[in-house]
Length: 298
Image (cartoon, rainbow, N blue to C red; front, top):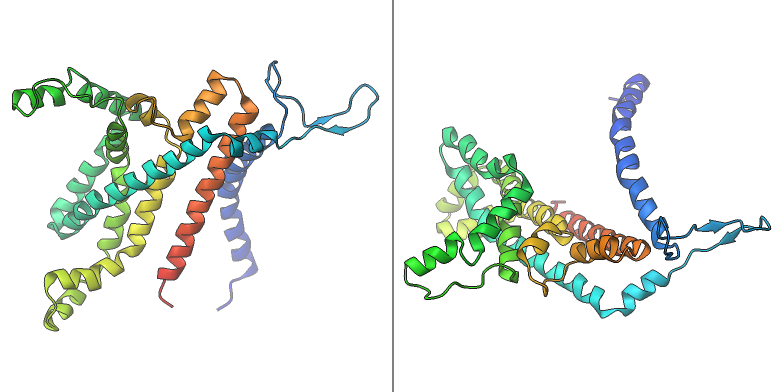
């Protein structure tokens, strides 16, 4: 059955607001950042020059430069920040998967009357400020924090341990902050599974572990892919957690971007870092799309 021209026109009009939203609040800021990354660094306000200069004689001159991108490729600091961001975001996503999969699986196997309260418990941290939650971890992991007090009270440690300003604290903060982004897509996927498939596998002689590995786990791969993307992509550009919980050796692109923009006032270089980060996120999204296409049944 073909769709009437009026219905197709109304469908396009319904899609217009989200497209306009993406254009104004995503595409235009990205283009502005890319434009600034091509400008020359100046000691002025704003601290970058125009891309097109007409000069005194009225002749148009293009002053775009790729010097900031060449500097990014040549400086070891940005490569270490890039690799550090990928490593921390990747390990955090895997830790969220190891913790979030059993949680989502347990929620789907709980009685129906308990599923909504359990999901509410998962998203409950979102009801408070993200910054306040990170500050709470600073108090817990501090030298005189609750964690060190419990360790000394139990006799596991004689002196306070250095828990804050470490890379382990960064992992803890990211996993705590982004764990719901792993649990929710996994729950949405696992809740749709047909449990009769597990019964059929048991009738054929499969043990519960083998039934899980051959039935449940393959069917949940789209949810795993979505959860990994939802954790990895925002963690890649995280700034607040590395800045508050991490030490000086914790290098991530978000922290480097902040330092270049506000500390050094190197706006073109900071814009180049932001553009490189955006390309990295786009590559992660493209990889996820390719994985989903491979996992999609033909």
